[in-house]
Image (cartoon, rainbow, N blue to C red; front, side, top):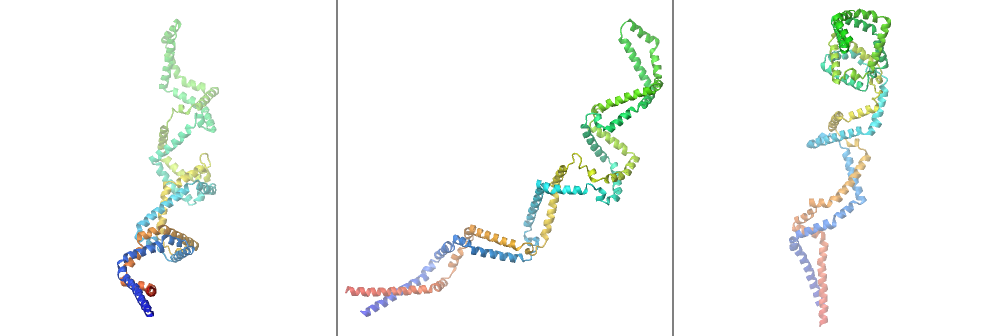
Length: 503
């Protein structure tokens, strides 16, 4: 019985161990080569879905230790980068010059827009421009031009004389001057109603005095005019016609007799003789002191009534074009005379120098009505945001950017502090984690990253794969064989005991 038990145990061990060994052999020889693709896919799914799933990777990335390691790596890279000697931007981007030019245009537009927006802000006007203009004005208002530009005093005659001579000979300058003067004069005239309003009190008094002092002049010239035969004929004809018309309009027998008597007695000849004596009579009668006083008072009243008239009616409603024509004619007549031109050009340097020696505050008229600082501020701010300023800023920005593009950058550490680098590293780490968390699944799917696992498994030679598995799981495979033998031996023992019991 003992021998039978031993035989059953040995036989069961050999059968169990041999069966498992044969099964392992079949797996490596037939099953594994035929199922390698399915095994590779399963390995890929296990690794990508279980071992290295997106959720586990993201969870691991959110670990403070991993975050600190990422930040440290980025910081180390930044430190190394900051110590490099970088060339200019043109050299760095020589293969992408079109992109660099586009970037330069964008920067120029941004600079120009930001500067113009800043200049147009009320805050800039009140806090920067207004105090600056006030300070500059206070600095120069009591100075004259020669104090600001000393060289101008010696250069003034050299500048003024040729320019003045050329301007006085220019028809276009006369036209512009007459247009400007006529516009100014019309603006002044339209603000007044009567001739009296046009004159200052001193001018009104001077005009009235001049009119009243012309009594002797008026009497003499009236007498001189009456001495002219043509004038005497007109006066005598007018008087005779008036007498005849007066007699013909009166009815009655007595008036008819007077009319007939005037023709018969030759009154017309008497009137003509009387007119020839009018000049001497006027001189004899009107040049007397009492008569002259009466004439003076009459002239004074006439001048006073003239000043009360509407200037438009007094001057027959002049238009700006008529005034401009009169001014142009006067300028042409005056400047056509060489002596006048010489006197003007000779006097101009002295006049201009005298004017320029006055304080700038008086010359500018800024403190006069209508010339307030608000108007100046408005004009300066409008000028600083206009098309010309836009062109200037655009040109300066382009020059600055082109110079910057050609400047070697050198070591970035020179102008980027350690604190800034730390902040950049922190931001870079946060952005990297966010990018990986948000795009990891998409990245692995688009790049086929996990296919490397399945492709690698499929690319292995069967024998190499078997050797690799046996190397990794040699102990486990040995235990599988031994386990089969142990199970076979146990079955031999059970078989022996069962046989004994049956007998």
